[in-house]
Length: 463
Image 1 (cartoon, one colour):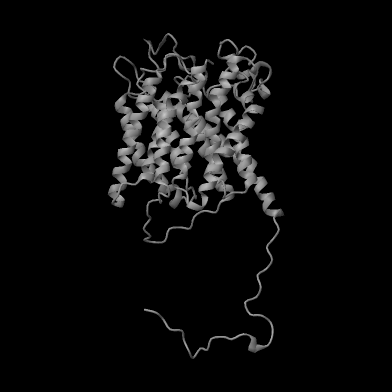
Image 2 (image 1 turned 180 degrees about the vertical axis):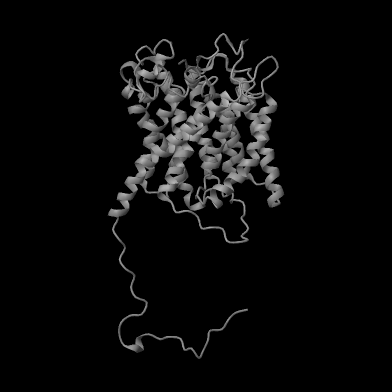
């Protein structure tokens, strides 16, 4: 990787910083320090786990599907389905442990560097949501597992030649699962891990009382949200461009443009909605909607027209406030960082949008499908229901691939975290020393030691 590319990689780390600031902007003041610590913890834990086992699990078999210099030794891929199912059903790589051996080439190091901002973000999402509310050992374990196991497996299935990428070649589902910039493998995954932590460790909110009016979440630090959005805009092109596996025919400029258009639509829709329901535009909800729209654009922006990007952004801006209300008040999951609504909903909407609004103008040859032509049309790429002029719709096959991919990544994130956390949480609860019983309200002794109010003299009531 040349020096300009290394500088670009550095800018990509602005995205986890921006998301951390947006998450902290709605946190209670007494938990603001935990928000700052979360990013540092995610950096150390996730990167450490990724170096030890993560890279090998993600890209240990990438050389089987990517014939690029430097990947020659990364050719070990495991599948639970066995060889009888044929190639393309890989589920975990088995080469490149500790970034040594076949992972010690310059090309492999470039691949590892490009994934570090992604893995840090995936770990930061649950660590920030749970830090200070779940036991310290639990947040540390979540951060490490995300980098060492959970993110690498999702990345293998999507980018490392695994089974989701090959749904097209193996099952005929269009171009297979498509996630251009981590909407699913980073953000939806991180939200699913967060949900597992919320379910295991935190009590649910009290039920709404009949007729109770629910106010918008308080914007404790609104300027942090504004700064976070600006950092997302600065770091997004680097986040996209540093991926060495991104097909050469994908125009990063178009991806960035469509993502910004989606963010603009989300901003206006969110501000307008909160103005109507609360009488004032809300900066916290706007920053969350913009962040969710950028996440959705990570999946869809390479394959849709500008009008579709604007429509996607408006939809996200209107749905995010409802999602925050549903998660916090109806489902009663205590999520002050809005990880479920911002990262989970944003990622899922972006992935589904590919199956509906992708118009065929981008992504030709994605996952080695239709390199020369697709559906009998030269140059046709990833296509959903609304194909552009000159292309044919590929519905519902691409949507089916997207739904399978979103479900697989969400279930992986939730159950992989839950399997580790739930038994340990149970053991920790059983061995936790019990608190001594509270002293009785009335001390034992002579009756005159305690004075009780006389029933004949009621207390005065204040009007």
